[in-house]
Amino acid sequence: MESIQSFKGYGKVDELEQQAFQKKTRKRMIILIVSSVVLLTVIVAAVAGIMIHKRNNSSSSSSNSVPPTELTPAASLKAVCDVTQYPNSCFNAISSLPNSNTTDPKLLFKLSLRVAIDELSKLSSFIPKLRDNVKNDTRLQKAIGVCGTVFEDALDQLNDSISSVGNNGAGKVLPLSDVSDVETWLSSVMTNQETCIDAVGELNSTAARSVLRELESATRNSTEFVSNSLAIVTRILGLLSKFDATIHRRRLLGFGYSDSDFPAWVGAAERRVLQANETTPDAVVANDGSEQYKTIGEALKLVKKKSLKRFIVYVKEGTYVENIDLDKNTWNVMIIGDGKDKTIVSGSRNFYDGTPTFETATFAVKGKGFIAKDIGFHNTAGAEKHQAVALRSGSDQSVFYRCSFVGFQDTLYAHSNRQFYRECDITGTIDFIFGNAAVVFQNCKIMPRQPMSNQFNTITAQGKKDPNQNTGIVIQKSTITTLSNDILTAPTYLGRPWKDFSTTIIMQTAIGSFLKPVGWISWVPNVDPVSTIFYAEYQNSGPASDVSERVKWAGYKPTLTDDEAVKFTVQTFIQGPEWLPDTAVEFESAL
Image (cartoon, one colour):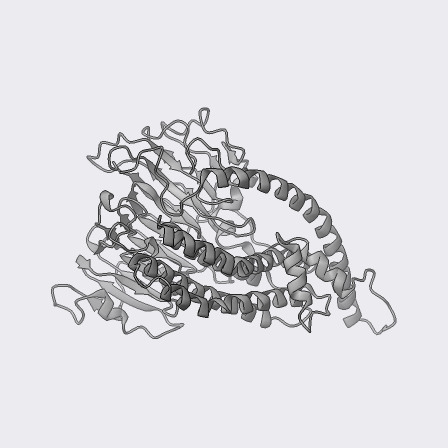
């Protein structure tokens, strides 16, 4: 049983390491910010000049003019790499490639992806060797197995990223929609690599610490290379795409009011199903044997891999005790129940009994486009079993509507990619909404419950590791309250920063009186988090919304301006105005 002082949770942080990181990060961020401003000015001026020159030349008969600004390939590569956190590894790795003699930032970005893919591919043979070295340690073998899974996922996401860039012609600027996709996928690659480290790091044993050191050494290059690619697409290609959009005077979508409940990735057909009381499913499940399928798992075997067609499973009222894991190749599945308190998927896997936190989920989904409606996801392991996930989602552009998530510690694992939760109930104790997705919870009911004695409640634990990841937890227009008939006496906080760049925003939300006035708590007791986190509140209401006694962290903002808050609306934070299709569904983005 952990006390408030001793409890650390998933992914333990050493206090001395945290203090050392603060000093190192402060210096690095100052250098990075100053250099980025200067370099971006040079890059944009130079590359934009070349772009405009090429565009003008294509419509002019003159062939003797020269670009207003020229960059040599070496200077161009250096300028691009200097916006990354690891400029030396970026320059050395890319310049060693035979086709790096280019000034096109998009081609340099593709080369950076190729470097990352080559490095990450080397780990496929490393993982089996690690497992062979710990044959007598079952828990550690399972944790290393998580590494094998997430590394494979990361490679797929890198290949998706290079394919997206490859579909765009040489010399052309990436559309903002493609930039948004690639930023998301590369953010997820970094999250997957970090998940491996977390899985091994949560085992507090001598053997685990030894394996952890090996993993950190083996993954250092691939982590740096992916970080470099993410910085290039965010700070260079994204800026050039916005510049190109301005040149073409393209109409950017605004941030006004709208009436719909769902993000733009929810197409017209899916919206009709979400809003309708009746629909025609592809499979029906009833645990009493009255339908063709008695379990959800049986029905999901019908789904074709990488199908572009929506597959709808209707699950009738009842409790379904089964563990579901929809892999990355299972796309566009929609599961509909009879109500979040009537159709329940229930499991009890937990960390205490030997399962890595990542694999404890009652229901796990990675394939893109997953939608759930009117269904509950429970983990019944109980508080004494510690980490026990009810749902884990790494599904890009996933939606959960009128669902419930019930557990204690680590109830809802919003692992990665873009996710949206509307009118959902989430119940738990320690870090019960956690992960590193770009996720918005809108009009939800969030209910901390009484934990074990000497424990505390933290609603969120956000895991952003790199400054360029487009990730974070946003809770908007929701209610933070208690369970019915639950007497909540444990210290309760809005969250704690899990990683170096953790990002969490609570806005326009009603907060119950049980919240501690300080609002937030550090991951390491009595040690302020690094200044690189971003925690904020905006226009909250309720008895505990007063921010006068909140924490005084350098990375916490007790209030945001309207312009700052709009960056965390559904439209901006998990969509981006440039990748909304013409037939997009509007969604609630009012501040």
